[in-house]
Image (tube, rainbow, N blue to C red; front, side, top):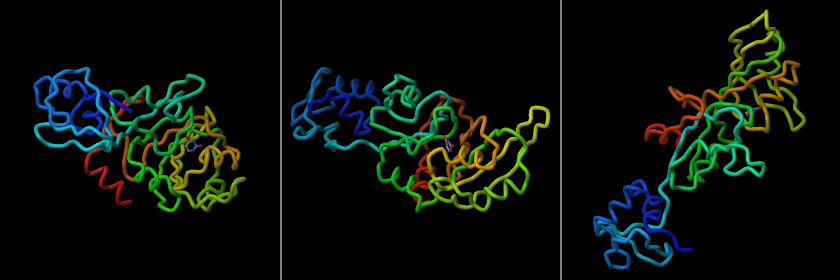
Length: 239
Ligand code: URA
């Protein structure tokens, strides 16, 4: 399929789409050996040879790695049949076809990674790799330490027993009859944290993912995103 020259260049990671337009206008781009200065030009990425400043641009997408503070009321897919907000309504201006690494529920907020690096996404979501994910759960009631021990040891859910979890009581609100609990798991069963707390009769009221491995949200606010640093990317590739 043909595509616009500046889009092809942006996906390959040359620069932003706007900057690529400038590079074209500056006469620095050749298609099949001929300089192209028209912005409307389309190319066939399979067949045409594109050069920028004499260097051939390969027909591959640059890998991008993004951290989003997923807000509540937003779905962790790239499209939604019910026209609800998706994570891509927040992460705008990226030319590559990114998708979320794993999922957070519609009403869960917090750290979500997005990438077009299929290999990394697969590794991070494979149970064998056991990357830790940390959540803060506001739950109904005040669970006893012995109830929390059930989660620490692993609890039976309908699709099997969970692996041992790290569970820390952060705050008990006797007046509101709620608790704030930090829980770290390394599996990704569907709605796992909510089902774990439901199993000890302390349903989750609010859930936020604060960490993936050692990556944290830092200064991001709900709906904000940033690209990962080279150090963070190297870390994820080696966990
Ligand atoms: N566990 C849940 O129950 N929900 C999430 O969104 C993530 C983990």
